[in-house]
Image 1 (spheres, rainbow, N blue to C red):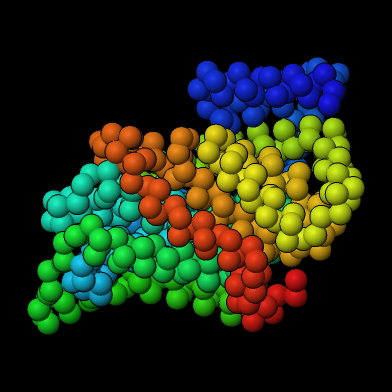
Image 2 (cartoon, helix red, strand yellow):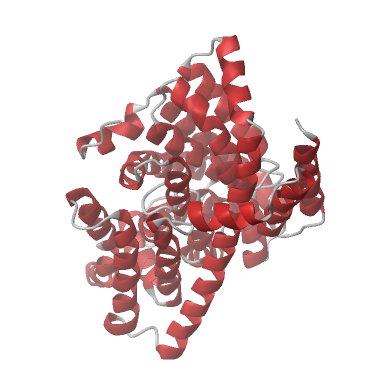
Length: 431
């Protein structure tokens, strides 16, 4: 490791300790590397403008962010909750089951765990606490665990970023996330069913026929969006990037015209917030590209490949080792660092061992989502603690129960690649 790269690490670590925003820390570290190595600082602009902003795929990110914000600003979250309550709310622990089901449906619209948690997640916490009498920490833990499904079932902002960084098919990544996302939802629902009996969680109210039909009818249109998006991508009617624009337009039609829940002033506020969130993501990616240039210049990926060859690791051994590393790092590092910096370093090893990049990408993103709710760092735990005004220690004491099934699903995905690759191959993916 050169002195310049040591300076990069030092700048990044100091920035993180001082709670400097991650994007600024990464940009500062990358610039420090260029200065210390005597290279033209203009390389930073070259890496960002040519490698990132020249990519058509990048357009999907602000569009998916806009779609999710429109849905949260309208009445869509509440409509989805009422419809899901009809389906599973009457069983013991039913409100927890509803929370997972709503997150699963909403995940096919948002692509972001934090958006999912801040939208329908807050509705779920309110209902579990006020109607079901759930302990605050317990309600937030269920909601946080369920929100990890959002970036796995398409659309998915992390999958778009992975495809951009590795040259993998976005469509294949999206389709590869469907089965794992459903497996995560099923594992959480089974866990809640077991805990409901053991911990005496309350049963929900059974709605009458007329009220049940009204609730289903109110949530019917939002539930058609996943069919529109996946059907359009699968059939080739539009690309994943165009699907993002379709999702945003569909959401605006529902919230603004059909439900009349979003006026011009509200729409302007949604656009402003979406622009701010998109800018944060873009700056984060810009910083990652500059850091990745330093990683490439230092030939760290080649060093890793040489080590793997010397250890004679098999593909399964490498995947198990990589996922163990991700789980440990996810307890301490931001998901953005793992996705944008660590993953590109591992890609040459993935190709060396002939691991399918879609399989590796989906498994890695599932791992990173688990990291969002893993103490002590668990970014999503901090966000939910702040939004729900629940002490962090109360959430951490409960969230472990829901981490176990998610880790078991991760292990199954590692050992059985067909769980990820079956649907993409059905659609013509040749990986």
